[in-house]
Length: 563
Image (tube, rainbow, N blue to C red; front, side, top):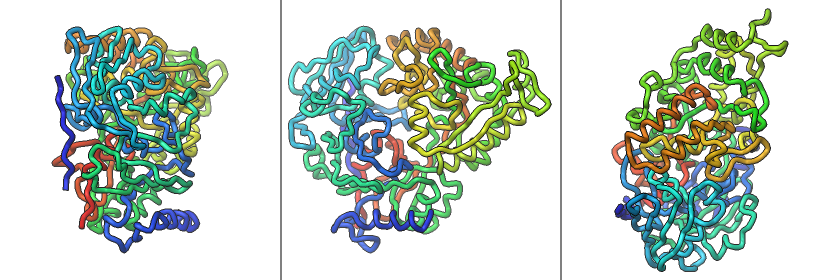
């Protein structure tokens, strides 16, 4: 049985700038502006580049606001993806498996309430696991039953050892008295959310949204930060300027010159590379993807045409980690890499090798220097999100490197919403974007969520959104991979998992539905002068960026205003 305790709380344009200034100072009478003490004003958080802000606190929506995931809605337990440690109990007190791993018995903390004052019991937990958004087809759940007010028994068709994080650390617990009335969860904006987390929504407008302390939270008396304001900023430079000016207290973003923000002594920063940066490719013509990237030879050629060392130094100023094409996070997950040859993706470009791959697949280089097949030039479109300067620079470099290998790539930027819609629907060719690294020291989660195909219900045809809780934006579907994923779900034998992961790795390294680039330079900037309790290099108790799902709610509980 795993027993856990809650961690003790530790002590651009002128017009755009004007709008932000109003958003940052027009919060509430309690906000004393910049002259007030930290405990007299909100903790100000970068809401990301999703602007204008639209009220959507539905944890299953692709456009959900960051503050919903952790500060408002919680899973049963918190898993720290920065370390191989035991989970921390949030709603859950403990859990244990039966002998064959097909049942998980969960003890729920007693005396809990939802933010509207209604009791939070095992019935809500059972409802949440049965709810369609948390229980897509193929999830394997046969029943979720509350045997008393604080006990829930989850029963599955097969052993679920490998899906521990998915079940217990990323299934959002919902109030049955609210969500039992929500049939169309995909289109439910949930503008007035009722959750179990430390905060509730006070106001939402196009520039920012305000969360205030949940008086019914289980540790409400120990909550040091009473108000959190999420501010929308649509580009890195403006957010950087606001940090330097003391207008933001917490941001997860790329800043190539951190000294420009930290020199005042107010802001500190951490770099915790965890998540892959990749070229999304809509790879599967059978599911409706269109474009030259659906040819595996083109993806393989691009993979060797990319100069990752140059991208690391020029786009990410040397702050990224080296990526493995197996998507095991090194050195944390090195025991799961089956073939040492696949430990790291090549760091230098090999235009000659790219040409050999293309020529073997029937492409020929034309007088213009670009390859063509059947009279059609090998030409692709590559987008990244406007304002994501590191990704934009990486995209430009990829365009130049591909040209040197005879592949024509047209590089452009799009607004965040267009990026989100394109990858959800599969209506794109190439995108520079981030993927979500595994939250435990095991690559299974990324294999199932990002590479799982039709057999494991992790993808969908172009024009339809991928299933909730899944991220297979490439529409990749390989039955060999799917069967290995299904087998790995049910085993608690490390040697068996290593063999199954080797099978998965052999396929995805060859097929490259996502072309690995780097492990993202995940920089977090935080105000250590006015607030204490942040994750640090010496105590990295949680993944620190302000956009991190679930971890942000846990971090906010540890913070205290100075003074």
